[in-house]
Image (spheres, helix red, strand yellow):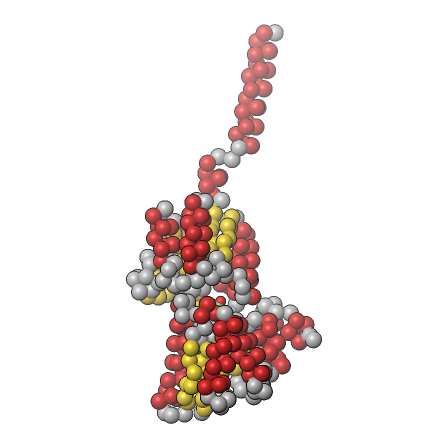
Amino acid sequence: MKRLMSYLLLLLLLSGCAKETTAVPNKTEVKERIHIGFSMDTLEEERWLRDRDLFKESAERLGAKVTIMAASGDDALQIVQAEQLIQLGVDVLVVVPHNAEATAAIVAKAHDAGIKVMSYDRLIKNADLDLYVSFDNEKVGEMQAEAITKLVPKGKYVYIGGAETDNNAHLFKKGVFNVLQPLIEKGDITVVYDQWTKNWLPSNAFENMRSAIEANNREIDAVIAANDATAGSATKVLAAYGLLGEIPVAGQDAELAAVRRIVEGTQTMTVYKPINILAEAAAELAVKMARDEDVGADRKVNNGKIQVPSVLLSPIAVDQENVVETVIADGFHDYDDVFGD
Ligand code: BGC
């Protein structure tokens, strides 16, 4: 009887132990849940909300956890937030830099903690960056200028640039001038106004456009704006001067308001960058980076310090002709939102 009791007791103890080991995840299981830190410049524009949501969804689908912080365009705050993410022990840091140069400090701090860094959409300059995932941003500018020069092969052009602190703004502008330069040299086109828009703010773009019109006695023939938010400001100024719909305007991002302007004829074109492809690719690559796997980046982009392994996706030009088969067919916007009242 005594032996039976001890046998039963032993069985009971063993079953208890077994329960305990399955209930508490072991160390490897805990480590396998990859933690990604996503440090964003801003959430002010429509696109960045999409980037945030799609990146989070994609990473979570892959089993990763994502902590997101947005710095509202404040360089110092973005660095503090990145430090917080590093302290949280993220396995990889994905950064949309507000300031291409200032964020190099984030890369150095992350590397000190053994964390790899990906530049998302915008390049971090002069840093030992691990990966850059974006669109072909020079191509974006080329598409804008190609569309506008087709309509206005000769005349006075206004260029409303992006934020000087954003490397993309330089690439967009380079692309525009790749196309304009030969026409400028031929004497067909004159760029009568060319300014950056501080912090990409629509209010600054509004002032730029006003100065452009005032400085040229209202005699301008075409406007290329670095994105749809700045193009929106340009159209407001054109409206105030009674020129809305008279002068071709290019933008970028395929924001809903811009696509609606295209349909009503007050903006000529935009450039659509399928954010879902960017966000999904970035999430997959971030997980690979965290696992120290090969990311298979096929391109290299010089960031002033190194040749950064890069993945560059293709943008798509959108005008009245192809709105339906591009942004609507892709589900980027709903038909009713674009064509509704
Ligand atoms: C992005 C654009 C965006 C702009 C302002 C750029 O770096 O590529 O899509 O409109 O920043 O946020």
